[in-house]
Image (cartoon, rainbow, N blue to C red; front, side, top):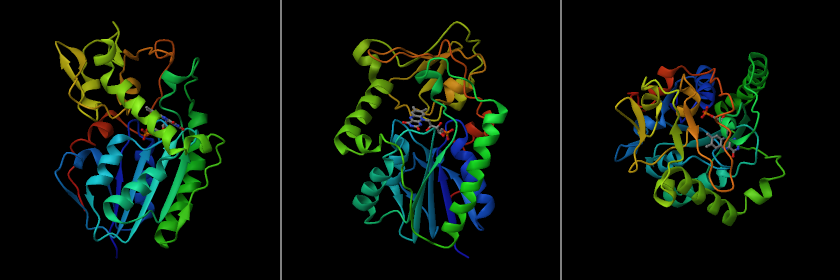
Length: 291
Ligand SMILES: Cc1cc2nc3c(=O)[nH]c(=O)nc-3n(C[C@H](O)[C@H](O)[C@H](O)COP(=O)(O)O)c2cc1C
C-alpha cells in the first residue's frame, strides 16, 4: 500500500484538525508538522502521496510553507495535493505553490482544495470580533467534515481536482504583482517594523504574568522570555501563526496599530482554538516522525 505523508502547519489547530481527519480516512497516512522538519538542511520523503495542509495568510501561503516546498525532495512522490484553510477571503496561494513546484521540482499539484473555517486573525482585523460559540464551531465543523469526506475519496482514487474560488476578490488577488507587494509588505511589517519605526508588531501589556506559554507556542522561535517577559527576537523571522495572540491565557499579547491599519486586539476576544491544546501546538516543534 502506498505511503501518504500529510505535512501541516497550524497556528491555532484548524489545519491540524483537517490533517488529523484526513489521517483517519486515508490508510497508511502519517501527519508530520512542517515546523519539525523546516530547519533540516534537506527534507526527504519516501511517500508516494504528499499532502500539504496550511492556513491562508494574507491571501496566500505562509512563508514557512513556501520554504518547505523549496526544500523537500519529492522524487518518490507520484501525487501531490494542497489544502488551504481560511475564513473566506480570496486565496491565491495555489499559484505560488504551482510556481515553486514547477521551478524547484518540475512538478505540479494533482489536486487543491480550500476549506472555510473560523478566523484566527479576527482579534486584529475586525472591530467587535465575536468570539465563535460552540454552535458556530459545530456548524463549521460539520461542513468541514463533509468536505474532508469528499477530499479523502479524491485523494484515495488519485483523481485530479482544482478548487474553484468563488470570491470576488480573487481577480485582484490573483494579479501576481499586487499579491507580490502585499506579501512583501506583510513580511516587513511583521518582522522588521522594529527597524523602521522603532517598534515591534506585537507587544505584551501589563496583564502578562510571565507564564511563558507564548514562548512555548511560538512556532518560529521568535519569542524568548527575558526576566519573565516575552521579547520578540530581531534575528528570527515570524511565521505569523498568531498562536501567541490567541493562546496567551491572559490575552496579554497585542498587535500594534500600524500606519493605516488599526488593530483591535486590546478590545477584542480571541479565537478559542477548539482543535488544539497548548501541547498540540508546542509538539509541532519536537515531533519525530518522518516518511
Ligand atoms: C496573519 C494571518 C493572516 C490571515 N489572512 C487570511 C486571509 O487573507 N484570508 C482568510 O480567509 N483568512 C486569513 N486568515 C485566517 C486563517 O487562514 C484561518 O483562520 C485558518 O483556518 C487558521 O488555521 P490554523 O489554525 O491552522 O493556523 C489569516 C490568519 C492569520 C493569522
